[in-house]
Image (cartoon, rainbow, N blue to C red; front, side):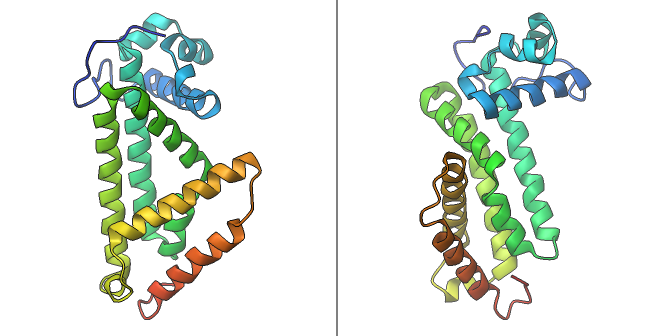
Length: 205
């Protein structure tokens, strides 16, 4: 793997031009490696080889492997924020939000960063902060969609966000392994509760 610093700042160090096509290629390549081979495979050398670049060029933009991994994590967090905004603007925002949570590719990347945070304590705080920010955005969306309806059902926006994310991730992960037992029942459970919450709210489910 590429060189690593002994500690990380609270934010990803930005080196090189932020809007550079080369930087974007490096990030896209690193993300693909993480999805397909796991975060441990995403060394700066491996990413450089797959992107057809010299390792020194990858190091120019990301001095350490940790810098690169954190930048990919931030890229994913920003993509999640856009997905949440798109769900809110969709004709069927509730279903769009649920489909986002159940997206296999999104969950595969999320699990890799959970594993990374568990094994690399110097990265944990930054990864957790990104996740907390996305959770707060989801809570905001659910509050807008359902308002007081959640309280009437004995739920909170934060609790519903965790339930949707948890069920979605389990279904996506087990689907990838060929495990399907109970999946239809779990999906029916989610659909049932989303329909209940959408009643009299003007939201199509």
